[in-house]
Length: 582
Ligand SMILES: [Zn+2]
Image 1 (cartoon, helix red, strand yellow):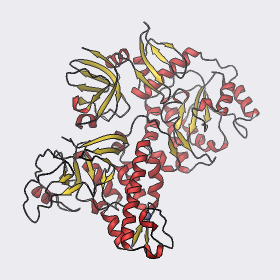
Image 2 (cartoon, rainbow, N blue to C red):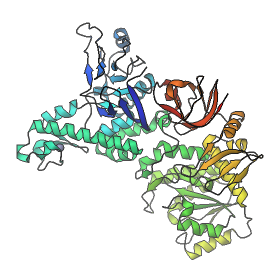
Image 3 (cartoon, rainbow, N blue to C red):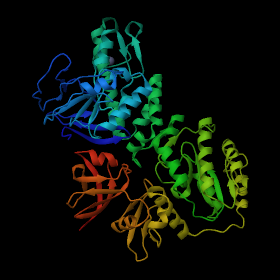
Image 4 (cartoon, rainbow, N blue to C red):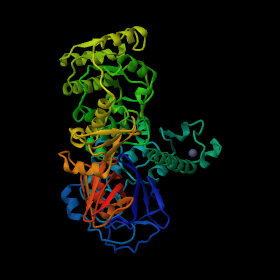
């Protein structure tokens, strides 16, 4: 049971939480002034402390440093008592489990900071062993430079210990580095401590500045989490120290840990400024779904075009020109780094219209390799009678790598630039004699494509076998043969929201349903975590979920991931859209 910690917002593995004390604290935060250590059991036995609502009491513990033999840890493990005040347990990756505490302090923190793979391994192991809605505390390791990566990995509590010690040693810390005080001609900070004239600035001032800098960095991190943009920040911030760059790349390799915690869509945009962006869960997930769930339903030729800075692409000037030339005689697929390939039906689907990238006309080898791999997998799955590559010269290398693996002939229509009069004329000529598809086909295929992408392979045909569409793109509404509404397209994210009728179809279909089982009550507005009996482990934040219990059948949107719903004792688990009493 976690009564004294609650997560309010999530950004990948990072969370914005609240330590529920007499005076509540927002995390990620420094724990110095609200965590009290009841002491180690190594020197002496200690009674269960009295505790208080003012602070988190770290229960008497035996800490094991990195490298302790497992048998030793097991033999001396502490059976933490169940207490009803805010409490913390000291654990190692070996001894971590649910002790009923609110906070888990990692005893091996000092040994893993600075070692990317050991750090990743310890965080992933401990997080798997403790309940999802408890706070993870790494003591004695935080600096202004590493705090963002620690929070990104899923650490909720840090302290100022290391930063203060460094200050007393004459080391001046900033978010980008560590400087010998004696080397600094100016103090690159405007905090109260740094207003002291340079020649009078002492090591005590330096210690005070270091703590201020750490607090400021954590405020930046919290704001980034609120905005859903910590990853963008970390891609830059981690560059200041090799082990931090290595650490966040380690987490990129740890697909399931980050994927489980990454929402299906976000309100915020995404800055694609480094090759590391290509390994983001959002990017890999889109590429994976487009090449394993999506299926092209048009019989027309394929036209490959470059992406545009304006999103959705169809609203850009270049795409309007392509559209005028194509006139519904071809299926349009945009090629882009960092997304890969974007079929026209998915141009609004997150993150296809949510990223900003630096356009230079020069691709890195990593980008070429990534987009070529996605295009190849896409074309292996989707056959076209003809392929027209209406692409500028810098895309040629990508198509060249894919061409040997494709049966259909590839025709090139661009001279110089895709929007020159000659290029557009070539494109029109290439489609001479091809048949147009109608508006109805276009709308049906769009809704079905989004359903495939969102719910799984074949979902479009399963959910929408008899379909009638009302209203206009992009606010399409799907109705069944009798006119009952099944779903509506959400243009901001390119996703579908189901109605109760749509939810019933989903349950009856062969498409795997994401279910949340609740106790005997009728939810209104939302379902809180304590009311949940069981939740499908495949549920991700933002997913459509069917909520079922003895008294209710409902459809809504997941506000946490599946395991978190099952393990949490506080917080909104599902935002309910429609409910029906049973
Ligand atoms: Zn300062």
